[in-house]
Image (cartoon, rainbow, N blue to C red):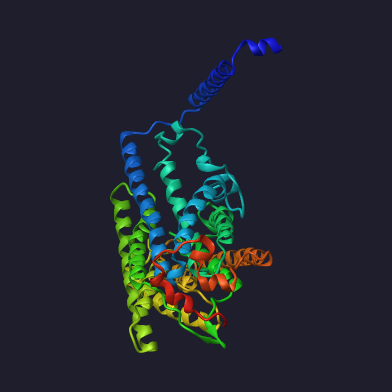
Length: 470
């Protein structure tokens, strides 16, 4: 046997090994082809193929718009926080997306869309990856059949963008004092498990879908989940050093309002992928009309929210505050997201006006309770996400819509996100890895966590004057 191994070089053995592996793979592929041929789906007509192509392209564009919202969140959060934490914030937003995509691919997508066997249930798992739809090979991913309205690949991109949005909402609520490694743990748990499980309850055909709960594009499923997860994080972390002194709220203005305004405008644009994109099928006059109508209700609510928040803030604080107006626009967008497909135009304006009022009340309430949320993540996404769910029960025109059902679904999903994240953040805190030290926080997370500055030192010196005790 030894002579046999010596007779041939390692390269020859390697070459033969590769050839054997190739033959095996080809054999398996041929076997798969035969299996597919035995159960070949119905061929699509020319019109169905045109609809499939159109829907896929539009869905892909909408997915890109929703992914573009990551840039909006990053700019908004950077602008409303201290310059010494800029790199940390940008890094977190990049990792929200990157970690979220991988976890959602391997775990989250299968949890959120487990298949018809779990209809009406609380929990189920299909398969990892896009296989959650029964897709196995590249040829299957490109197949056009009479049963599919759009490519599964486009659907995955659209859904994973929503998962990343839910995760990145929390970043603003915990900014300036959370350890980076703990943030990565949180982001993985939310996108891989917490968000997909509650999403399955409605969008995956679970018990809320069977109950008749409505949430067209995610006021509750996406935004309230992110907002209440952020609230749990803010509570467990405690306020930033100097944010409250002897029980009194001390303002800590952001370092670049231009970035914050740019971020909100990017988010507003991205919302046209978020809401109209959730129509999912766009081919044909009826679908085109509904998609455009959704864009109009979205725009009206955002505008009304900005105006309402500006006016309320002006009355309360004697001066018009641009940050209130910016958060008001986002509040209106969040409030309309659950019902943008079914409310009247006048109702969209009312929903936006109430959301603009609620966001100001929410910001004031957090101050009263001593909870530090640097960007207003909970008032915008949590509180106004709840309002969006309830507003659907008040103004919704879809058949079977019920305020009681909306109340139950909204309450359960919000409690699920808050409760599970409170436990997770509590565990991280007990392990001593949740919050950075007072010295590291005062120095800035850019240096203490990442060893670099986003700006020249002369531009961030004022941030180091933050009081060391509260």
